[in-house]
Image (cartoon, rainbow, N blue to C red; front, side, top):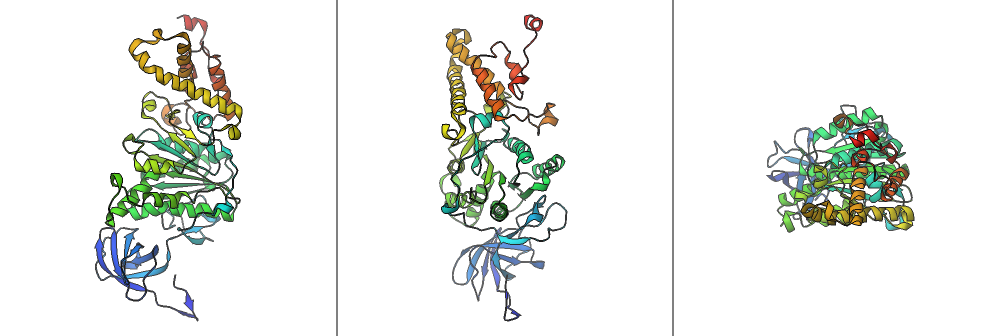
Length: 473
């Protein structure tokens, strides 16, 4: 903002609109040209916010609207705020919901005792980053055993429409926020308003809202607003990490919508698109956001991000660029979802950099490899089974199929967040219980149990053997 000098306030730097193209506005500043990323205000009561994207010449800038531009006309006065977009930080933002401007959207008064900080900040330098690798348990069997997450790392939930990304993300919030001592931040980028409202109610009823902050730039908002909401969330997360030395759990739904908003802005600016219609600056924009999520000596920001995969095509540039930033990739499969195997995680496509003997230990590593190779063997045999039937397989292959089918069912799990729909009480399973269950199935301890006995249970001790009479019948 324009600071007083020698006791007097300098008049604000103003310009005039020369052109309006939907969300793109050209403004002429005859005196001082505002720097890129400066926030501008115009309209009645200064209610329309614009952000400078590029400087066209010595007097003209081109800006993107962060709010609807109805009523804008050529010649209207635009005021330079002298600062970039800012959001509030402080302990009083906990348990609140905000928009991209840091305004509360939970129908409560604005938080008090807050400091306003720019949403544009540089990533922490390499010298201040922590080099320790630590596993972050979620209570979900298939993730903890086969795709362990990293404390201070980034994990992606990849999948097409309707395979359960948001449900899995919500379940992780439920399981982790309860025993996670730090702060949780939920950032909704370009997703449905309904999901945000439901999440707020669920978190309130679960009693975990006091340590949570929510930010939303929903799909009905302009691309400029959706593009900046992720940066706003990271500024809040960095405050709790660097100033309060607390661990932060940052949940983003959906990172693809951030890329999509960037593509929309790029198109509005008239830039030539690159492959498949994406913006040419896709890699840079994603890196500016993702590199701020880091583990430092002060604390860690652990991020779990839902990533929509267009048309289930994992070679799409949005998915490819996101993969390169992650320490764990959890791929959700439509085929498994159609078979009723929830969570629909594909164990053969999902991967984690944490799954090494030096980090998770020899036992966990070898068990995960054995589970994966058994499931891979079953996948290879499926064509033969479909054509010739199970009877044509050798006894060893048949045993591998029986083990794999039991493992598939054991790795399903009832969720707390879907209990009202499924009628099953949610289960959170410790890593030791999940590992011992897989180990016992691989050792054929459950070959006399029907596959259904292992479906949608928590620990392996919940598997019930049928009565002999029932088995004979």
